Length: 101
Image (tube, rainbow, N blue to C red):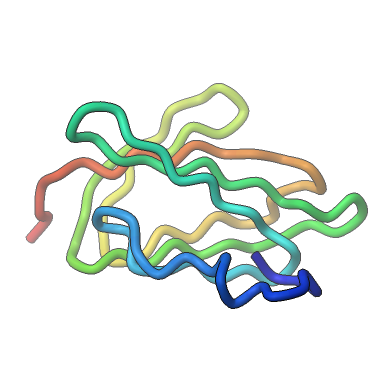
């Protein structure tokens, strides 16, 4: 989360599976979920007026799927850059438990 939430330090993402951190240029909220041994996140641009550029950082090179506007897209690397998320837009990030060399 980026904004002015009282006591926001307790809500900052420390890590979630291979996700080591998230940076955003505007207000962003990350929901962290688990199903079985799979961990994934749902990111939402919480601004009502401003687009956000979001970067998801991984603890190791990672592959996976980004679902944006209902369309899946493969990704690989130590970072996933999501450009110009519209106000209120959400995306699903599904890191796969495999290392990419």
